[in-house]
Amino acid sequence: MTNSNEINKTGWNLDNSYARLPETFFSEQKPTPVRSPELVILNDQLAESLGLEAETLRNEEAVNIFAGNDVPEGASPLAQAYAGHQFGHFTMLGDGRAVLIGEQMTPGGERVDIQLKGSGRTPYSRGGDGRAALGPMLREYIISEAMFALGIPTTRSLAVVTTGEAVIRETDLPGAILTRVASSHLRVGTFEYATRFGDSKDLKALADYTIQRHFPSLKSDGQRYLSLLQEVTKRQAKLISQWQLVGFIHGVMNTDNVTLSGETIDYGPCAFMDTYDPETVFSSIDVQGRYAYGNQPYIGGWNLARFAETLLPLLQDDQEEALKLAQDVISNFSEMFRNYWMEGMRAKLGLFEADDQDESIIEGLLSMMKKHQADFTNTFRALTMENYEDLTFSSTDDFKKWYELWQTRRSRQGESHEDSQQLMRKHNPVVIPRNHRVEEALDAAVENGDYSVMKRLLAVLSSPFAYTEDQEEYCTPPEPSDRPYRTYCGT
Image (cartoon, rainbow, N blue to C red; front, side, top):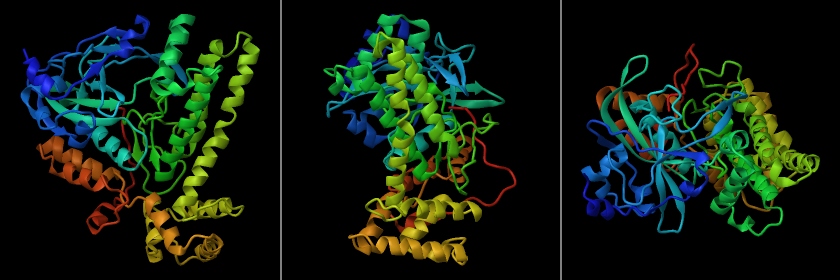
């Protein structure tokens, strides 16, 4: 048994507000112990922001917590129940291989979920083993931390431990557990579960809890449930615009992967686009392209419509009036997204204020990028650094005409050229977690136990807007291939 004094030294300060919801929303569930856990990576910066002592977290007692062999004082482990539309079809789901050990109260007064992913079977495992392999857990660590550095709301990764046990997939793989940190794990799918399997009291309790957790200013709002819908819609519109602005493709935008906090969650079949093409798909199971890059804004609206449906009983007693109120909110999503995206695209091109010509300038650039199969990130990097010779289409008449329009537009604004360049540097990352670099790091770690490649990659990704020489080697796209890059639902 772990010494409780040693655990307390780490700084755990847990509460369990989710466990005070009606029991229909969760099952008490302890993690399943593992044979011989070993810490392979720890996020020191995140640990310190959570009020945890990073050095102490490397001790055997702390590693046993990350592995699920023990729980810190104040923990009340549980698996959350939820449902969701997966590729458009409703499914009963839940934490099939994750356990929420509690909510850490940080020194800054925040409340964040601490979840162990890959910690064993739960009542929602649906025949699965509840475990996870090392590669996908490291992948989530890399991508989620890269997203954080890019300034995009996301769940984060505190630690990964190996379990000393094999996970059987197509072959035997080394098992691992990820400690995930999130503002919460409340999802659109949680509300779908409440509507389908709970009663009106359950739904109201969940909505009130969500407001208390993420939107406390709405508690005194006379139409707080309508305002809840509006706020969640706003956060999702902004989040998806941020994905689009860096070429991020989530890959599995099911409603159970739509957080009410507005954070990106679930880094399974996701990846960053190299060559710009709105039809780009990375997920091996998305054969119809439902979650392609260009479809993400539309799917975002579809998912929010599912959320709105769950709230109808709370909006008005008259269901026709409730439906109208909900439709009015959802109908604003496209414009809301477009405004966030246009604002971001203007910043990527060094434009401060809106102008009637902006849309044609932006669409003109994207059209050239698609036509000439240009790299998404490197195109904006070249424009920012004024290295126009690096553009694949710099010698074309289309670019010369576009460039003249762009420069004329920039000259009309009050800010200087230097101010414009600085704006571009703040919004155009030099580096992203390119797929081939991520795979290189994972291969070294999983196949050879070499984590140095991953740590170098993480160091570079931690400052994506630095524009330093040491980032140059990480800017190179992969070699051309006849086989498109594919990711899998392994996380």
